[in-house]
Length: 449
Image (cartoon, rainbow, N blue to C red; front, side):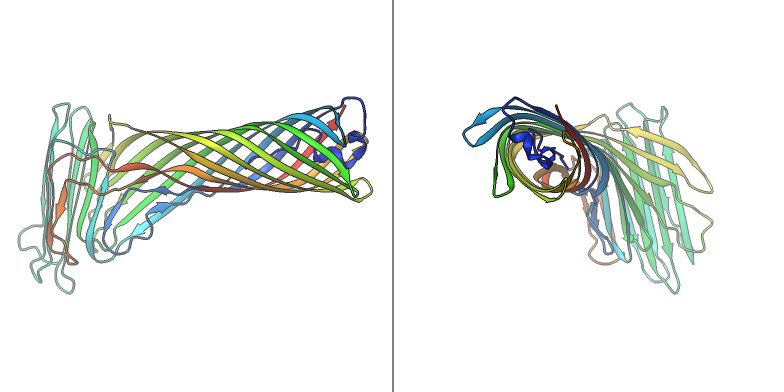
């Protein structure tokens, strides 16, 4: 993703190798513009599936962006057969990725979506039984939120009801600082099934549960990530000409900053059994996370350039780097409920007062391959068309386990069972690391003076 004009009188000026034969000091300046295509580590959704049909546990991190680069160099004289120069190059890449995954379910099982933390003063009991002719389900919730309000939900299918039952209840505490949602779905006759659902949210956390026959349940996870990747290198270069080819080696300190700002939204569409005059409200959870990584290290590189036509030069650059990395992550979370029929729930959003913060340190290495063709516009001006393939071995992401440690259930491959939640829990989160790749086609303008 980084772009460097091998700038200490580097490849662009080699279209006229006379610049390296001058005895007087010379300087160069260049600007680069490029489009970047990158892949970054996936982001874990944090959903615990105890059911068939889950399609993935993470959301992709590929994206596109724009890259800008500035480089300058100053010749400092000759050392034997070598021309020496000092250069400074910098770049900035601004990119974005937007990925969506929909998990759909068929058959019996459980789903848990725990927030950073879960409500301390809540008790949830889901019970389902798909007995032929007497399918039953219940969702019972009692909750007192930290501000003193609370909800009580008790949803059952009507006694001896045949056919299809879709039923729910929702409650929002005074002050909109907590809410609870319970729902049940049963079918009797040709199909005998039962499912129960519950969601509770307050300023001390949020949680969603599903149990029983989850056929039709759809959970949509969208991750929108903004990326800023920038850095600068200070290089000392030694150049010479041999066999009609210009050869340049360089080395120096290097710094990189990678800033990832991501918003993850998880939306739960609870399915109704058909025919249905009832529509369940939608539960959603949103995470805003900021992950900043600082890379301190150094790079070494080699650039080879050879004329291939009048006023045209082909160059190939390779570079490697080693960095110490410090990562810092901060996150906030909120929970929402809205909609439903026949009784619509107004949009209610509750913020979790418990954020999350993590730090880590490590070592990363980088590699880059950069072919280019330079066209001389004049004796001291060049236009370069090229591309870079960049690799960075260690880029941070977030790993999480959506299971709720304090929840227990008796489901074992059937619609029948009980799920209990009665104590707060903190979802296991950690920083995870994977490589980043990028490809950047570029166009550069360079001049010597």
